[in-house]
Image (cartoon, rainbow, N blue to C red; front, side, top):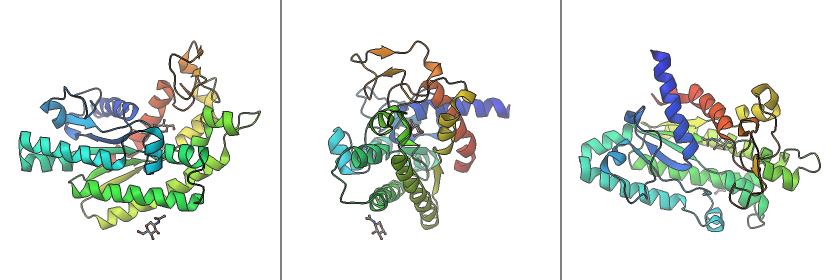
Length: 292
Ligand SMILES: *[C@@H]1O[C@H](CO)[C@@H](O)[C@H](O)[C@H]1NC(C)=O
Ligand SMILES: *[C@@H]1O[C@H](CO)[C@@H](O)[C@H](O)[C@H]1NC(C)=O
């Protein structure tokens, strides 16, 4: 019984994790109710959708406003403003008290930062006046303020996903990995510097915000292990994408592999569904109890 429930929770977490980036809000009540979270900006959104969780994600976003400008996406502030709008609608639908309860019981997942580091810092020269220590501190400061804002609005259970070995994605291997298509160690190193600051910042915030249950969701080591030992996981190709060669799989892509389950990466930045299944199961298994 316990196992079935946990499996169902995993299934649901899977869709949240796969579909969502940036700021996602989900209601713990919905576990087992809906498969994916609708975007908050969906014009057909119904009250039930508000009650059971929506998604404020903007693919390609980041903490750094330059990342947001480069990718023309919604910023942290934009997403917070949508969240305020969401709260207003929720209050109108179910009243103040129930809204506060829903917010306090919901799990929020934030996944952001890889485009700041892999994109803005390493692929453009706009932020080179900072060294990586300074730049990662700046990002973590923004993240910390963001978390405190969410807390002020009533969020309590918030999971923040760490960066993964972003120097190992096919795109970075092509640019900086040489003939062997190695991982780019400087980028992986930057991701680990960022992760350790993020983890400390979350610990500090848990002390500062008495009712908070902030959880650092580690997403580096399992993915690293999967890349380094991909054969043991049943993958054949870890250094190039199933669909390529562009950064995303689209109509201009001239190659699509026959069997995506043999590839770690779907396109030159994003993993395949099979990879996500492995990673998300691992994250959920290790962390779900921390939100309770
Ligand atoms: C974990 O890392 C992978 C690989 O970079 C990434 O695609 C995925 O979005 C990350 N998971 C979450 C929940 O952010
Ligand atoms: C981050 O915040 C801390 C304390 O709030 C401050 O000491 C530090 O200078 C800030 N770092 C950056 C890069 O803004």
